[in-house]
Length: 87
Image (cartoon, rainbow, N blue to C red; front, side, top):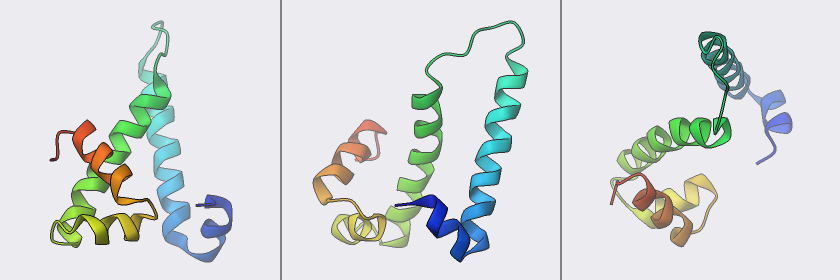
């Protein structure tokens, strides 16, 4: 999904982007002298797990419907659910 195009359509996407930006900056600020590492994986895990939990609730645990809503295939969804111990 192209977030730039989507952000211009709704305020929701820009507020999500702003929230992630602020939160990541706050996290980096709290590191002090410690070096940042694995930030990409950290951010993805922090966002992906609650998204999966919410989408599974929203679709009443229908994996096909959740995958369709998320724009991914069902196999990818199952892999992500397993990664986050949600299966």
